[in-house]
Image (cartoon, rainbow, N blue to C red; front, side, top):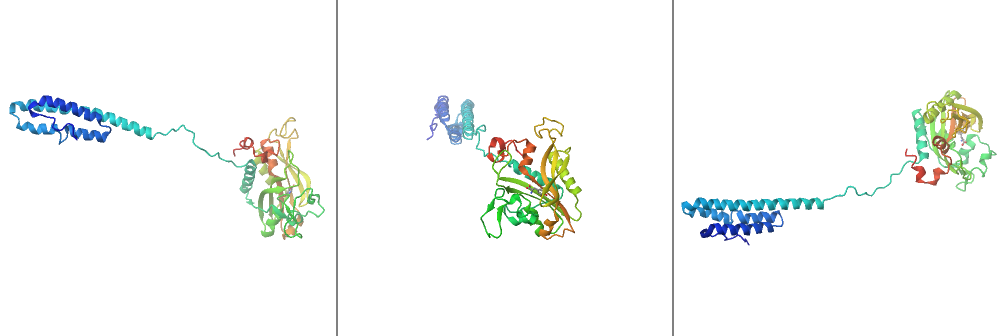
Length: 360
Ligand code: DAH
């Protein structure tokens, strides 16, 4: 229903226009949204409105009244339009405010996050050592952790009465054919034999992996630990190649001023055999109070040597045609020395306060 319909009485124009203004104003103010306002505006001043009718009626009026009546109508129409414009502004502002309120997102609220894991410090060291040897042209090789005694010992020239073969040192498995003794490999060296058995020389490999020994846990022993094995076999490999390669590895891993020294040792699968020490990266061999090397100046790093001809024979290589060197290092030891870690147990405690210190 149009509350402004029929409000204009041509006989009483000024008064009825005032009434129209009041009624239209109330109608406009009552509009609850822009659509309602558009409708109210059309009712008050649109083509069907009493204002439009009054304008159309002007032509029928006597000439002398027409101008004043026209002004009056225009004046009221303007006032109504002003009220509409005000109301429109208010309604649009309210609509904007409602949209903003409805779409509000509190960007300061903490969202759900999954903590990011990191690569374990032991794996970080494995990756770093492997990367260094890959840079020197080596390939990565792998072997099983449940291993035949033949690969773990016999193929590596380790006699049946070697103390390392005792149950007090090696964990045996009650599995498979009893003729083929099975064990959890006590070092990564069996990968040497497995690899040579199925690959012709030249061989340049590093073999990282888990190793097992019947050890009681203490600050430097875990029954499960990691080693990285290395093997280079070619036509004229010499002891100088061994030393040069390991010196380059030590410089890349511990720092460019690192020096190495070799001490005679014994391993069944190498002849001659040696242990490699690196100069202390902390004091460079110069401090009696150094907490890293305890004043020794050198850090024991790994075992190595020239591959024993009997190992070549065991895997079907001709010991007169090739020579080679091999080495094996303990990953936990490398990590402990590098980071000044005082107990090997930290690596398996799974305490994030420890692990978080090695973001990688
Ligand atoms: N397998 C030895 C160990 O576990 C380490 C080792 C020494 C590996 C000399 C080698 C080597 O390849 O040539 O103690």
